[in-house]
Image (cartoon, rainbow, N blue to C red):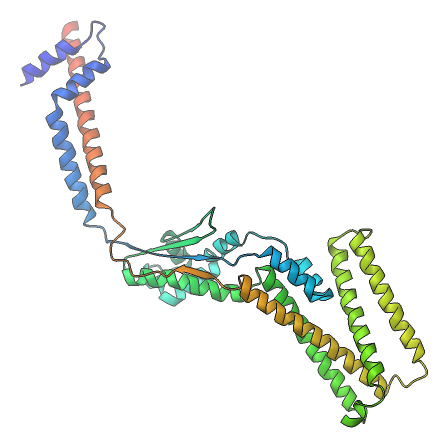
Length: 376
């Protein structure tokens, strides 16, 4: 056998004393049986090694993030009045999908998941940060570029826990976004919620001051009613216009048309208020009439804010205050890892490579040996 190999090597050595590509191919073809056997043996060994790895299961869920409805927002702001402009000006356009992608991978959500499923024990980690890294390695989140659909996949050795983890991500994300104002409608709802709370306290104080003036309930409905109602509505409109002017001044130049127009509106309302104040200067503004006017003003302002707050809540529920769940994660029936076909192909490739390398080295060693003999 060795004699035949040396004869083959003699025949394949070129006249320049170097081994060419065709010579290597000839040597590989001659040892094809060795290459095939090596590939099969390594493939079998790789498949056998895959049985030593614990199987993993992948659960998948998908959902749509809240969508910005620009047309509906613009019309809603136009119908809400002056204070609606104040809230709407603060909310800019954002990429909601990217925001929710970041929230899913946030430390806040990760900590909730670790505590909820005791993942430090599951991953056999002593430090919370290591458990966070383990959860991140087993979680994949993708945002569709065309449909904006967010898909979330979780790997785990327990198929039921994998499904529970995927569904828990959605629950924790909903709980987190309930505390945040991400969409334009949510921002308006939070804004009016704060304003409404202040107006409620001020209305309570005004009501207490009116009751302390010593006037009965029947007297409240007497003569000052028409004048006080008009004064209160005018004062509420002036307050709303002043708030909108402040918001416009923060976002637009002082000499812009919108700011100049709103400034003129505020000036006109304040002038009318001053005119009414001078007309009633001789009256008792510190007693019943003053307390009644303050009460009606606070009542009108509270009613205005309450209507806008309810409208913002309706917009929030309509245009995306909630996640739109598409697929609920179910318990996977088949394992996702390890893929034995991939192990087999890898083993075949390694066996093929090692066999070819051994044959080429043998060929080179034979050439060197012949060259030394020829020189001797």
